[in-house]
Length: 427
RNA sequence: GCGGACGUCGCAUAGCCUGGUAUCGCGCCGGAUUUGAAAUCCGGUGACCUUGUGUCGCGGGAGUUCAAAUCUCUCCGUCCGCGCCA
Image (cartoon, rainbow, N blue to C red; front, side, top):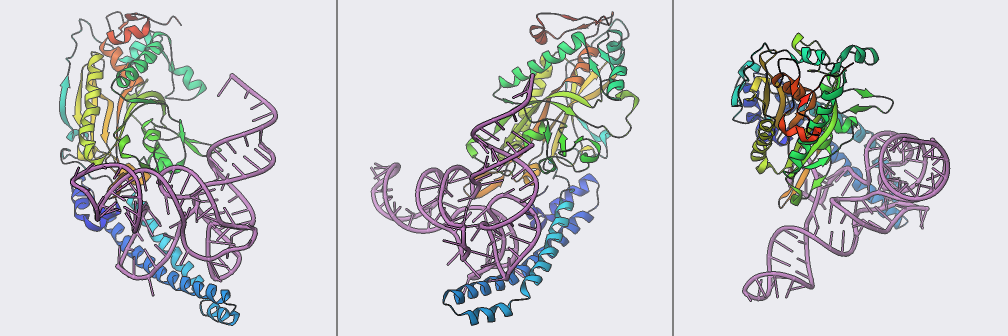
């Protein structure tokens, strides 16, 4: 959510941003109109409250001196004030609620370096890492590989849960754990603090961190308490300091989160998304930073550097993409995606997303830090380190051998008792 | 799950019984004093707006009242005891 001051003093900046995104200004104008109306109603209500407070003081004074007659007189004079105040109070409450529910829908201000473009076709290449492997055979897709090695059981998962769930078995399940442990060690050695968050959140906190449409399409609602299962540890870790004033000495706060991620994935998805590429549940190691505004752009690059060095160390080929205006969501001001090469399907596909959300989440969450001039909103940043299911797909496609077995990346071998090849599961 | 206590500005704490201007301390910011620092003293230190002798704010919501931190109901959370439990 953008600061309301932005609408009052710099609406031109928001309008220019909407132009870059190719969306109409209607909502901006409506927020400004509602804000003016709210200020007016609020002022009128304040004036009435002021009258009432003055009268109440008069009554208190009269009662103190024992002048009951005077007290009764004032009481009669202000008899109708309460009803008027209630009426105006309801009006101003409605105005500000409408204003802010609309304000929640207005996207963040994009950074200047975000390329202009209508859709994902407008994304630009930021850099390329590693090389495509040369295979002396025709590389298989990850779906073929997990099938022939019995590493994934989709039908039985569908039977007991539903589609897009999976059993992960044998050596692939072991490598999944190795990958988690490796990524955590990699980041904790860079002074990121490991945090295991709650896997469910309440509605209020969740509204602070996500696009409102996500409640319909992404999150599971757990009854009877009405909690929402987290779609990523970004959400609890970012909302952790909700309603707090953070000591500046704590900033920047670097965290590495681990959690299962639950996603409803409502809507149709293409053939290429079958198997374990797009699933309802996976594990993700996530980087989170809470920072002062002046530091956030430098820290955004730090997050990307961590990703690059982590994925380089796995010996994988991938490219980094600078997401364009038309492909950016509501929350981020700038976003890099890391797209790994999948030789089986001959395309680059998204495995990491690295965002600077500036003060958009912290305005909603009322998350500030203390400065000499008062409290100021912090900036929040997040980046995948590894989403295990997708990282597994990249590893098995790129490291596959002619017999369908897979070489384990050297850095993961110590986490698997020195094993070098993923063996098939025999059932 | 049952019973009890509690929730007050960044932290800590008084006010609640008996309704009538948000208390003391710490930390922080500014000023005075000083060569500088410490110490001391003074002032400030939640949010909002049309900046006023203004309004709101005491975990959230509702109610009673001219008036609620204070009384009532309800929800949330914390702590203690009991029960259950990996």
